Image 1 (cartoon, one colour):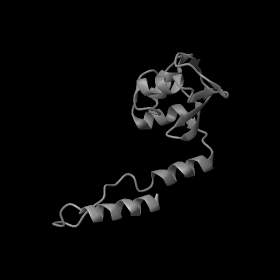
Image 2: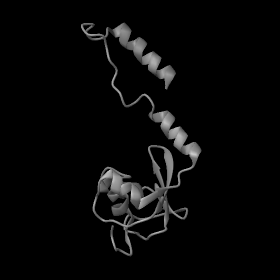
Image 3: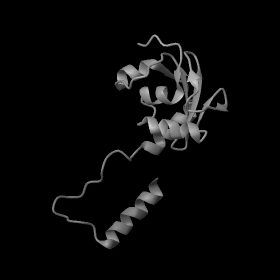
Length: 131
């Protein structure tokens, strides 16, 4: 990949697709959600191969080990080779449980029209109890 010695932490987090934009990665660093060795890092801090990062994202704690340094955003298959996911199993399970059922849109029978106010409230109550 890259033959860099060091790269900015915000640029790397964006490049390996941990954050959708560099601005989001920078803001996460500024608000203390990114740590190296248990210490919050600035967005401009340089990281190198072998560093371990803790990233708090959407209320979940992820851990990554830097395998390769890149500065340009790359496709997901290439990006996954640049880090090792060290996130504890219980944290991954919490994330997966939270994510289940959120990807697919709800379907209604064809010709049923929009839900009535009563039906909508029943649907919302069902969802609230389920998740």
